[in-house]
Every structure is written in structure tokens, then in C-alpha cells.
Image (cartoon, rainbow, N blue to C red; front, side):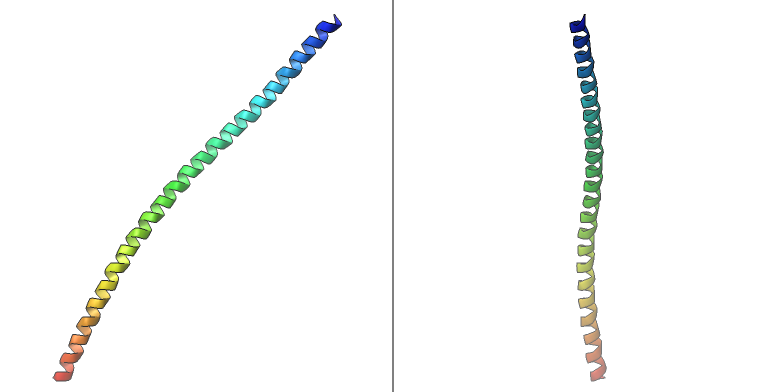
Length: 84
């Protein structure tokens, strides 16, 4: 009878250990899913920022060209004023 009690205790102990490991694995899995979702969100934000930076660079180039064009126009007007 005592051997049977030890076997039962061993099975209960293994079952308890299994449940602890299962809980730990489920917790680890949920944390991994949470981190994956955060990573996807961060990746989307970085992509949006990269797109915005590219658009701003294009806009800055366009503005620089417009400034150059206006500076040339101002020089032409100044030369015309001097000759008049």
C-alpha cells in the first residue's frame, strides 16, 4: 500500500510540475505575441517616418530650386533698376 501511495504522490508531483511548465510556456507565448505585435507596429511607424522624410527631402529640394529662381529674378530686377 505504501508503494502505491508513493506512486500517486509522484504522479501528482509530475502533474503539478507539468502545470507549472505549461503556465510558464503559455505566459512566454503571450509575451512573444505581444512583442511581435509591438514590433509590427513599430515597423509600420518607421515606414511612415521614412516615407515622410522622403517627401520632406523632395519638398526641400523643390523649395531650394524656387529660392534660386527667385534670387535670379531679384538680380534681374536690380540690374533693370540700375539701368533705368
